[in-house]
Length: 96
Image 1 (cartoon, one colour):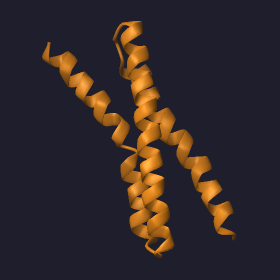
Image 2 (cartoon, rainbow, N blue to C red):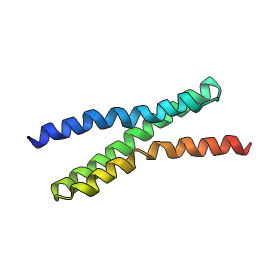
Image 3 (spheres, rainbow, N blue to C red):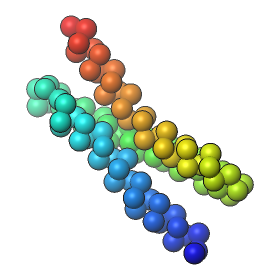
Image 4 (tube, one colour):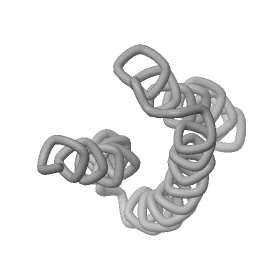
């Protein structure tokens, strides 16, 4: 299989999960006011975009070196990055 096609398939499955999981968590578990929820969703989308761009840059470099296992682990771990801000916000609300 061509490498370009493989990367398109990876991005096709990875990108929706990377963006939609934090937003889904905010919808399901959130009890904030609407403006706060919109701000959190916007922040989660920005965090998702940044972490995905950084992760793919590192993954492409690792894949070119032939180190696929660390590359895929970085993709998996980078999915947790958007949840850090959500978790910090939830702790901030609980502390009030």
